[in-house]
Length: 197
Image (cartoon, rainbow, N blue to C red):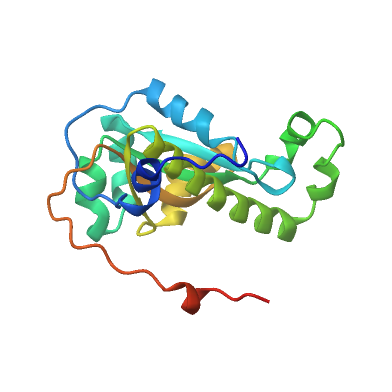
């Protein structure tokens, strides 16, 4: 609720002490967990409530073998050992759901046939939704390992193209271990990254 801050412990769990993990416990992440994370993350704002993000949960051996050839070597071991790898993607035809998602006005015509607007909106809002997904996962007790080291064209061709979806980034999902976890890198100071005008 607006005006009511969450606890400091919650902020630690979602932001201040959360890490990007590379090694994983053997615990299983189930389809019911995928749905819980999605149904929490989906409430984040997007352009005109367009919700272009699509999520592919790669958690079976068959799915991992299809993904494997398209993951860069530096990310391969942590991806194959993760309980699940989420392909955060976006739908080139997201606007076709606009009558459902924006019922007060038919917004589909705003996007239809406008490839540059579709690309800009789809990529930006799906990136936001990928971030919401990670925050929701952390809030629900899971750990994440987002990464961009993969062959997007290969993943699109192998897994997404028949749906009209395009990949944005990958995010390993599970319960992270501290094995190989290096000290946390610093962040920019307020005065380095912010302006007040």
